[in-house]
Length: 174
Image (tube, rainbow, N blue to C red):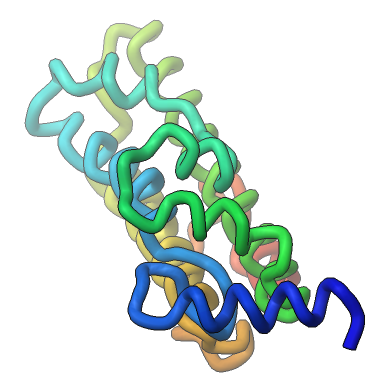
Protein backbone atom coordinates (compact mmCIF):
# COMPACT_ATOMS: atom_id res chain seq x y z
CA UNK A 1 0.00 0.00 0.00
CA UNK A 2 1.53 3.32 -1.07
CA UNK A 3 1.51 6.46 1.06
CA UNK A 4 -1.44 8.10 -0.69
CA UNK A 5 -3.57 4.97 -0.36
CA UNK A 6 -2.65 4.66 3.31
CA UNK A 7 -3.45 8.34 3.91
CA UNK A 8 -6.80 7.96 2.11
CA UNK A 9 -7.74 5.02 4.34
CA UNK A 10 -6.78 6.90 7.53
CA UNK A 11 -8.84 9.89 6.37
CA UNK A 12 -11.81 7.65 5.60
CA UNK A 13 -11.73 6.34 9.15
CA UNK A 14 -11.51 9.89 10.51
CA UNK A 15 -14.43 10.93 8.27
CA UNK A 16 -16.89 8.49 9.82
CA UNK A 17 -19.76 10.32 11.52
CA UNK A 18 -18.57 13.73 10.28
CA UNK A 19 -19.67 16.09 7.52
CA UNK A 20 -16.96 14.66 5.25
CA UNK A 21 -18.17 11.74 3.15
CA UNK A 22 -15.98 8.76 3.96
CA UNK A 23 -16.09 7.37 0.43
CA UNK A 24 -15.47 10.58 -1.55
CA UNK A 25 -13.62 12.55 1.14
CA UNK A 26 -15.63 15.62 0.11
CA UNK A 27 -18.01 17.71 2.21
CA UNK A 28 -21.42 19.03 1.16
CA UNK A 29 -20.85 22.12 3.31
CA UNK A 30 -18.96 23.59 0.35
CA UNK A 31 -22.23 23.73 -1.57
CA UNK A 32 -23.55 26.31 0.91
CA UNK A 33 -21.25 28.74 -0.87
CA UNK A 34 -23.10 28.19 -4.18
CA UNK A 35 -26.50 28.05 -2.48
CA UNK A 36 -25.81 31.55 -1.14
CA UNK A 37 -25.27 32.89 -4.66
CA UNK A 38 -28.38 31.12 -5.91
CA UNK A 39 -30.50 32.48 -3.08
CA UNK A 40 -29.30 36.04 -3.77
CA UNK A 41 -29.99 35.68 -7.51
CA UNK A 42 -33.48 34.36 -6.89
CA UNK A 43 -34.28 37.29 -4.62
CA UNK A 44 -33.23 40.10 -6.97
CA UNK A 45 -36.51 40.42 -8.89
CA UNK A 46 -38.52 40.65 -5.66
CA UNK A 47 -35.95 42.56 -3.59
CA UNK A 48 -33.91 44.73 -5.98
CA UNK A 49 -31.71 45.88 -3.08
CA UNK A 50 -30.13 42.39 -3.19
CA UNK A 51 -28.60 43.08 -6.60
CA UNK A 52 -25.39 44.54 -5.19
CA UNK A 53 -24.99 41.59 -2.80
CA UNK A 54 -25.34 39.18 -5.71
CA UNK A 55 -22.92 41.15 -7.87
CA UNK A 56 -20.43 41.23 -4.97
CA UNK A 57 -20.57 37.43 -4.47
CA UNK A 58 -17.26 35.83 -5.34
CA UNK A 59 -16.40 32.24 -5.87
CA UNK A 60 -14.07 30.57 -3.39
CA UNK A 61 -12.06 27.47 -3.88
CA UNK A 62 -12.95 24.45 -1.78
CA UNK A 63 -10.01 24.69 0.62
CA UNK A 64 -10.38 28.48 0.97
CA UNK A 65 -14.06 28.05 1.80
CA UNK A 66 -13.24 25.71 4.66
CA UNK A 67 -10.23 27.72 5.80
CA UNK A 68 -12.57 30.71 6.26
CA UNK A 69 -15.34 28.71 7.94
CA UNK A 70 -15.97 27.85 11.56
CA UNK A 71 -17.30 24.35 10.86
CA UNK A 72 -16.27 21.68 13.30
CA UNK A 73 -14.91 19.41 10.56
CA UNK A 74 -13.13 22.10 8.60
CA UNK A 75 -9.60 20.80 9.24
CA UNK A 76 -10.63 17.31 8.17
CA UNK A 77 -12.32 18.69 5.02
CA UNK A 78 -9.11 20.54 4.12
CA UNK A 79 -6.86 17.56 4.86
CA UNK A 80 -9.05 15.07 2.98
CA UNK A 81 -9.59 17.12 -0.17
CA UNK A 82 -6.31 16.25 -1.93
CA UNK A 83 -7.00 12.55 -1.27
CA UNK A 84 -10.49 12.49 -2.75
CA UNK A 85 -10.45 9.60 -5.25
CA UNK A 86 -10.11 10.80 -8.86
CA UNK A 87 -13.38 9.18 -9.92
CA UNK A 88 -15.15 11.67 -7.62
CA UNK A 89 -12.70 14.54 -7.60
CA UNK A 90 -12.51 15.04 -11.39
CA UNK A 91 -16.29 15.36 -11.93
CA UNK A 92 -16.58 17.41 -8.73
CA UNK A 93 -13.95 19.87 -9.98
CA UNK A 94 -15.66 20.03 -13.38
CA UNK A 95 -19.09 20.68 -11.94
CA UNK A 96 -17.91 23.35 -9.50
CA UNK A 97 -16.15 25.03 -12.43
CA UNK A 98 -19.47 24.88 -14.32
CA UNK A 99 -21.22 26.42 -11.31
CA UNK A 100 -18.70 29.27 -11.22
CA UNK A 101 -19.23 29.82 -14.96
CA UNK A 102 -23.03 29.87 -14.69
CA UNK A 103 -23.04 32.20 -11.70
CA UNK A 104 -20.54 34.58 -13.34
CA UNK A 105 -22.67 34.61 -16.50
CA UNK A 106 -25.72 35.54 -14.45
CA UNK A 107 -23.78 38.24 -12.62
CA UNK A 108 -22.65 39.67 -15.96
CA UNK A 109 -26.21 39.64 -17.22
CA UNK A 110 -27.44 41.42 -14.08
CA UNK A 111 -24.63 43.98 -14.41
CA UNK A 112 -25.56 44.63 -18.05
CA UNK A 113 -29.24 44.95 -17.10
CA UNK A 114 -28.29 47.47 -14.43
CA UNK A 115 -26.29 49.47 -16.96
CA UNK A 116 -29.37 49.58 -19.19
CA UNK A 117 -31.40 50.73 -16.18
CA UNK A 118 -33.33 47.49 -15.90
CA UNK A 119 -33.27 45.90 -12.48
CA UNK A 120 -32.85 42.30 -13.59
CA UNK A 121 -33.25 39.93 -16.49
CA UNK A 122 -36.79 38.86 -17.25
CA UNK A 123 -38.30 36.54 -14.67
CA UNK A 124 -38.46 33.64 -17.12
CA UNK A 125 -34.79 33.88 -18.03
CA UNK A 126 -33.80 34.32 -14.41
CA UNK A 127 -35.86 31.27 -13.44
CA UNK A 128 -34.23 29.20 -16.20
CA UNK A 129 -30.72 30.18 -15.18
CA UNK A 130 -31.47 29.59 -11.51
CA UNK A 131 -32.86 26.14 -12.36
CA UNK A 132 -29.66 25.34 -14.26
CA UNK A 133 -27.58 26.42 -11.25
CA UNK A 134 -29.82 24.44 -8.85
CA UNK A 135 -29.37 21.29 -10.95
CA UNK A 136 -25.61 21.73 -10.98
CA UNK A 137 -25.64 22.12 -7.19
CA UNK A 138 -27.76 18.97 -6.90
CA UNK A 139 -25.38 17.11 -9.21
CA UNK A 140 -22.39 18.25 -7.13
CA UNK A 141 -24.18 17.04 -3.99
CA UNK A 142 -24.76 13.65 -5.58
CA UNK A 143 -21.06 13.35 -6.39
CA UNK A 144 -20.04 14.40 -2.88
CA UNK A 145 -22.37 11.76 -1.47
CA UNK A 146 -20.75 9.03 -3.54
CA UNK A 147 -22.96 8.74 -6.59
CA UNK A 148 -20.97 8.32 -9.75
CA UNK A 149 -21.65 11.09 -12.28
CA UNK A 150 -23.57 8.80 -14.64
CA UNK A 151 -25.79 7.72 -11.74
CA UNK A 152 -26.45 11.26 -10.49
CA UNK A 153 -29.83 12.91 -11.08
CA UNK A 154 -30.27 14.22 -14.64
CA UNK A 155 -29.59 17.85 -15.38
CA UNK A 156 -32.37 20.17 -16.46
CA UNK A 157 -32.41 21.27 -20.06
CA UNK A 158 -30.23 24.35 -20.12
CA UNK A 159 -31.28 27.24 -22.28
CA UNK A 160 -28.91 28.45 -25.00
CA UNK A 161 -28.72 31.77 -23.14
CA UNK A 162 -27.00 30.18 -20.13
CA UNK A 163 -23.23 30.01 -20.09
CA UNK A 164 -23.18 26.25 -20.64
CA UNK A 165 -25.64 24.44 -22.88
CA UNK A 166 -26.83 20.91 -22.12
CA UNK A 167 -24.22 19.34 -24.41
CA UNK A 168 -21.37 21.13 -22.62
CA UNK A 169 -22.71 20.12 -19.21
CA UNK A 170 -23.13 16.50 -20.35
CA UNK A 171 -19.56 16.52 -21.66
CA UNK A 172 -18.36 17.17 -18.10
CA UNK A 173 -19.51 13.66 -17.22
CA UNK A 174 -18.36 11.68 -20.27
